[in-house]
Amino acid sequence: MIRFLFLFCFCVFYEFNVFADDITQCAKYLGDRDEVNALKCANSMIASSPNNDLMYVYRGTVYSSFNQPWNAIKDFSKAISINKDNLSSFSLRGIVYNMLEEYQLALNDFEHVISYSISQNNVQFISVLIQAAFIEKKLKKFNKAIMKCEKSLTLLNKIKQNNSLNIFDTLIKESHLCICEGRIALKEFNLAFKSCELLYQDDVTNYIYMINFASVYIEQSEFNKAIDILDKSLDKFKNDFLINYNLTLAYKKKYEKSKLEEDKFQWRKHYLILKKLSKTKENNKLLHNVEYEN
Image (cartoon, helix red, strand yellow):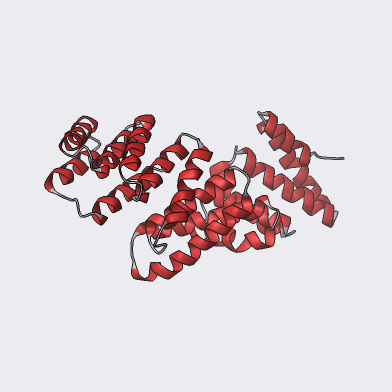
């Protein structure tokens, strides 16, 4: 979330051409993690320009960067009261609400930006679109989340060829992650496959990508492929419950289809390991799904 704050802050000041010497120095304090001087600089600029919304945007960014989220929200709200047309203030306030897990308030701000943005072919708009989608996913509004992330991919593909910023690669991955997990939640595993596969191929050591892609293979009855992914992760995640759960599930389903004693043996072996790793009520519920039967 912090990277989005810096991104929006930079774009706001660049767009309005306010990189004067004083604000450049203030931004340097922020980049150097110098809380005292960053805040002192922000207060000085507000004292000089109390009706400039961008000064409150900057101080709000300082507050949010140094774990003072409610002060940040107060400043972003002040910026909005001065200039409702600067959608970046809504974006930044939404980011902080999201950090605070005030999801509906964050979504309200993001939806405002999405509705009133004149241009959609820019990083700021796409970032808001993706963040709104992840909130909708948390709120189990999976179809809405997927639609937003599919739109973000379309926009990114249009503008990425003319840009080399690393943020584009990050946004593409987050869009695919949203689609992958949203489709899995809807049990649309065939539709999830492409995004889940792209993410896993990009980083075969990523825990989330491994879990998602293996779970898709399991639901497609590609048990050996799922087992291969999960087996490779055991050196690093030997005692991880979800890795072992999916491995046990793969062998259980494989045995139910093959009726081979070797698969039954592996199911029992991994079930006993999983049983030892089960520490919570949520774990125990999952454990019931793969319970070994003689």
